[in-house]
Every structure is written in C-alpha cells, then in structure tokens.
Amino acid sequence: MMKELRHKGWNEIKTNDSWAIFKIMGEFVNGFEKMSKIGPCVSIFGSARTKPEDKYYKLAESVAKAIVEAGYGVITGGGPGIMEAGNKGAHLGGGTSVGLNIELPFEQHDNPYIDADKNLDFDYFFVRKVMFVKYSQGFVVMPGGFGTLDELFEAITLIQTHKIGKFPIILVGTDFWRGLIDWIKTTLLDRFSNISPKDLDLIHLVDREHEVITILDEFYKKSNLSPNF
Image (cartoon, rainbow, N blue to C red; front, side, top):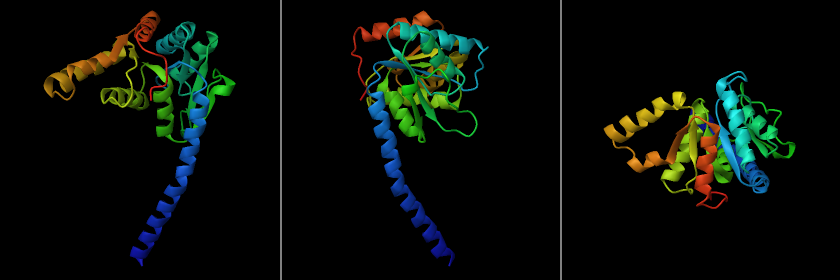
C-alpha cells in the first residue's frame, strides 16, 4: 500500500512538472517581448536590506544617475534597498528605469521609481536571471548577500565558459569586495589553480561613479551594444 501511495505521489509531481512548462514559457515570452524593446541597459545589483541613509544606497543612486546620463538605461531586481536606489537614480536622471520583480516571502516588493511600462514580475529566479544576462550591457554589483553573489558568479561563469559574450562586470566598494577578490587570487588561483590568471580580468573593482562610466564607455568603444545571446 505504501509503495502504491509513493508512486501515486510521484506521478502527480511529474504531471504538475509538465504543466509548469507552459507557465515558464509564458514568463520567457513576456520577458523577451518587453525587454527587447527597452534598449541598451546596465544592471545594478545589491542588497534589498540596504537603508536609504547607508553610504552604498547613496552611491548606487549616484551611479545609476551617471549611467543614464551616459546614455544607458538601468535594470534592477525591482525591490527595495540597492535596487530602489538604482531605479531612483535612473528616474532622477530622466532615463530608462526597469524593474524585474520576483515574489519573495520577506524582502521583495516593487519600488516606486520603476517606469510603469517596464515593471515585470517573475515567479522563477532562473527566468529572471536570463533577462538580466541577455539584455544587460554590464553588471554593476554593489554590496549584497547570497542573491547578489549568485548573480555575480553566474555572469562570470557564463563569460568564462564563452556561453555569452564578454561584458563589463564592475564591483563597487573596495572595502566590501576586497576580501573576496583576495580570496579568489590567493585560494582559487595561487593555491589550487582552479581558475586562470586571465579570469581575473573579467572583474573590475572601483569606488566612484565616474570609474563605472569610464569602464563602460571604454568597453563599448570597441564592442557593439546588443543582446548578449
């Protein structure tokens, strides 16, 4: 009897998985249709927990404003914290402000600085990450937690393995990122040889808005602005 119940439960899961394909397809279709019309953008990542009085919130706002003034739009995860700061800076700079929202139990709610026609909702993290990677001309990564690190390392991995074209990955905040960069150099590279020296060239470490813009502009003097795959 227990064996039959286990198999019944497993078959129900398989049926639900099959129907989920249509929901996933719907998210991809909606995302591709809307994002393909937005134009060249730079994604800003960082913690949802960062408060408006924090120096990194203010820096993210300034970076976003500088990005739109340089002719790019801004994409964020659409929520509070650094995401809100990014959308706010884009809004204040009169540029494109995109939010790719996802429903989470505690942190996520859309912020008021996203353009009304560029506020997208997702149920699946992996669909949302595809939109970031496909339609971003660069990643600006502010201090954050596991989600920020996930997005950072996925982009590095895809570029390293040539699954997508190279684009700038800019870490903002030396005092936050220095320990990670040192660990990558001393442990991953020097001690275990798990990466190659040229992989370090995929990452830029800066502290100022103008440094972000310089890296983006220098890169796109030599490369076309287009979706990454």
